[in-house]
Image (cartoon, rainbow, N blue to C red; front, top):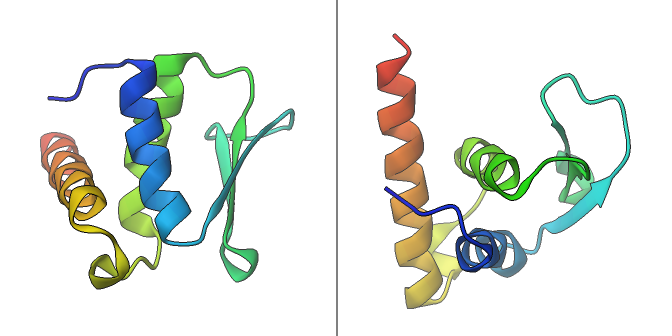
Length: 95
């Protein structure tokens, strides 16, 4: 399980960065705490989310995005694989 630290947030954001997504933290009326603009490769998160919320939300978002793992550096690909596996485990727990 990942720890909810600034370092973890930075690592998850690196996945999006290498996949050429832009992560923005803004005010807005997000039902889920985030919004994905797939055409522009922009992910907008509610800027009022605390660190744990930001990490949890990004872990929810990453598997939904069109990311080609082959384009990621080896270090970031491992983080990506961990995030996808974690999201999958959480998803199974909800069924």
